[in-house]
Length: 99
Image 1 (tube, rainbow, N blue to C red):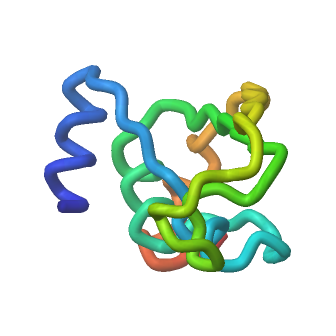
Image 2 (image 1 turned 180 degrees about the vertical axis):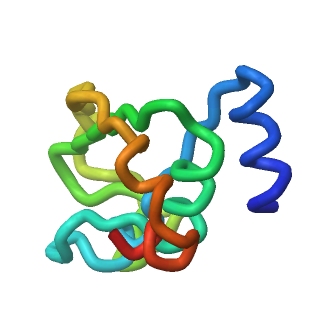
């Protein structure tokens, strides 16, 4: 999967990755897993973080998928500043992914 994702980015395709850990533990700080970081460092020119906020619990592990929320959820989307990945490419891939 990593190699195909890197190839897709290098060919000019867009790739969207969601942080699954956020649904499991909403209080944790945001962080990419190494696989996602490796794809970004090896394949993307820049990384554009997009933050999606829902005003109530929705589609997480604390609620059954079939339980409807008490009201219609409101989503807000914020596009973060691009992250230049060039400085990370000089490090070996495992170190670049951790950074």
